[in-house]
Each structure stands twice: as C-alpha cells, then as structure tokens.
Amino acid sequence: MLLSIWLMVSFGFGIVFAENLNQFRIAGFKLGFWFAQQGAIYLFVVLIFVYVRLMNKLDKAFEVDEV
Image (cartoon, rainbow, N blue to C red; front, side, top):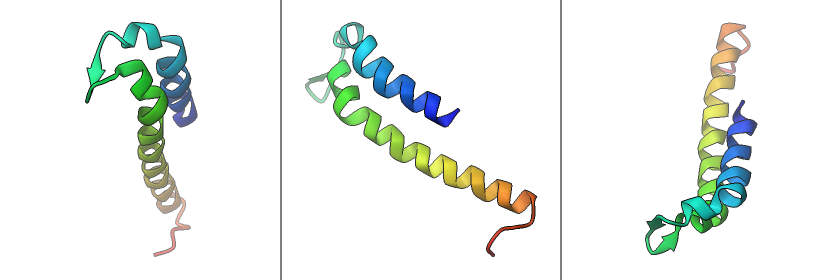
C-alpha cells in the first residue's frame, strides 16, 4: 500500500500528470517539476515514518516489541 502511494506520487504526479499540474506553482516552480524533484522525496521520508509506526504497532500486537 505504501509503495503504491509512492509510485502514484513519483511516477503519476511527476511524469504522467505533470502537464496538468504545471498550471500551478510552488515557490516559483511548476508543480509537476516540484513533485518530480522534491515532492516524491519528501513523501518517501514521510512514508518511512508511517512504515516504522505501523511495524511497531504490529510488533506490540504480537508481543515481540523491543521495549
């Protein structure tokens, strides 16, 4: 699920929908370019933290957490 979100943002927003998104700007850059260069990286970092939180929750559910 998390990888499909990252694929949609990096490939979809950065390549497929770039022309439509370029109508908007963030800090002077076209939105399609921003997603291709920065947005996918930021989202990937957020997804890492979401993954860690979900895995910690799963570890606690099966009583194999490290604490």
